[in-house]
Image 1: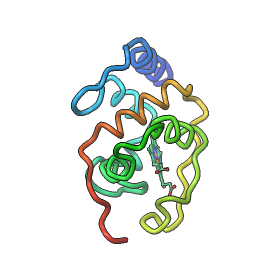
Image 2: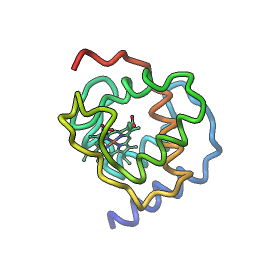
Image 3: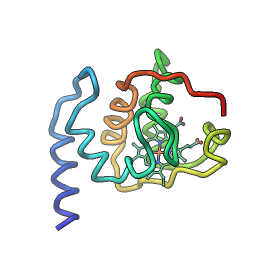
Image 4: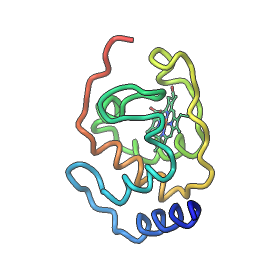
Amino acid sequence: MKKIAVSLALAAAMALPVVALANGNPQTKSAMTANGCFACHAVTHKVVGPAYGWVAYTFAHKPGADVKLAHKIISGGAGRWNAWTGGIPMPPHPQLTLAQAEQMADWVLAQKPIAPPKP
Ligand code: HEC
C-alpha cells in the first residue's frame, strides 16, 4: 500500500509541467514527503541535514545548481555541510530519476533563502 502511495505521488509529480511556483510545487513537496526527505530536512532549521533555506541561500543565482543538487540527492554523500552536520552523509536515493530529483532540487531552491548561521 505504501509502495502504491509512493508511486502515485511520484507519478503525479512527474506528470506536472515544471513551473516555478512561489514556494515550490506542492506536488513535488508531497513526493519529497513520500521519499522521507523531511525526516532529515526542514525549511528553516537544521534537522540532520541542512535547512533547505540555507541551501537556497548558498545556491541562489548559481546556474546549473538544480542539476548539481539533483545528482547529490541521487548519489548522496557528505562534504559541503560537514561543519553543521558533523560529517553525517546524506544517504543515496537511487529510486529517483534525474528528472524527479531535479524537481526536488528546484523545490528546495524555491524556498526563502536563509543565511546559514555560524556552525
Ligand atoms: C538520513 C538523512 C537525510 C535524508 C533522508 C535526506 N537528506 Fe538531504 N542531506 C542530508 C545531509 C546530512 C546533507 C548534508 C550533505 C553534505 O554535507 O554535503 C544533505 C544535503 C542535502 C542537500 C544539499 C546538498 C549540497 O550539496 O549542498 C539537498 C538539496 C538535499 N539534501 C535534499 C534532499 C532531498 C530532496 C531528500 C529526499 C529525496 C533528502 N535530502 C533526504 C541528510 C538527508
